[in-house]
Length: 397
Image 1 (cartoon, rainbow, N blue to C red):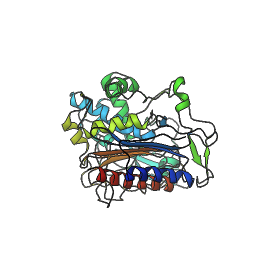
Image 2 (image 1 turned 135 degrees about the horizontal axis):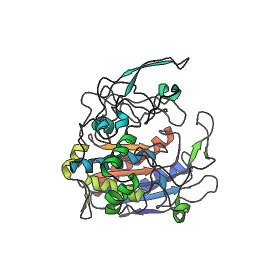
Image 3 (image 1 turned 90 degrees about the horizontal axis):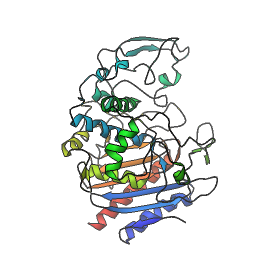
Image 4 (image 1 turned 30 degrees about the vertical axis):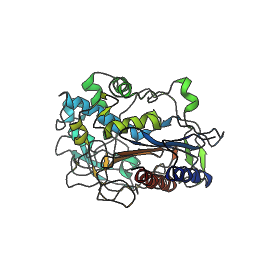
């Protein structure tokens, strides 16, 4: 039994239902929950398929998903609240607040065959803005073969994963940068990250189901973590064994939250409304505008090739054309039937995604729960959903 809700019965809403249900029937994905909101209300939401391929447990609207890197925009909002209060500046050297970032080293060379490497000092300090925009020089093992294969020499420590791939500000590279942003929030606010989120974002917005640690009572609502079978993750979708933990002892800014489409829908609706929701303001309107502007200048966002099977290549990025704001990918191209140029978006490694189209006053959230990230069939579901959303919106206006 699946849950579905529409503000009104319409052919377009029925077509959205059919599109998502069709993906389940074809076994393209095991389960999907999706939501569409404008500035005032939820226009559509539906849940289809199963929460666990092993047990066949039905997927419900209030299912809890591990949203992974969809944590990043929340962390970015938290830091921008502190910027608004004058507690930290975007162009401050991050080492001013995190001394462990002083003296950052950059790879001068790396031998893939032997693992031998040479480092040099970074030419400039990394600023707060560099970490908000993924231009710090950090990486992830799944986005960089160098980071994947790097083994530090005895006595060397790297608090956020490894030496820099390049000098801060030289390139855009998807990375652990938002983990640094999370630490900045903790140090500047004097609170643990989850406590700060709860007090300054989740409670004001009524995001009662969003947390790093899922309470035992809510455990039955958590979707099982799943993955495609095979060494290259290209087979049927199966349940991961063992399952990831329900509790995260040391939350980080770059990932780890569990949430629902309803809660994340409230977060994106707040941004659609210039930082306020239901009479409660969490950001100034000017700050929301600032976060949605290009902060990487002439640099562009490249469509990374994956270095590990847990992610496919980043084919959802308009290679070399998209831009980055303070916590968000910025769409540059207008693709017929899809989001407007200037729309903000990102996703999580378990195939959860969102976009915010301020020009049209529409946001969409769609959640699945399996690896690899950017799986071709998951992206096809997202594409069909987005196109159906704009048909729905056009019909209602």
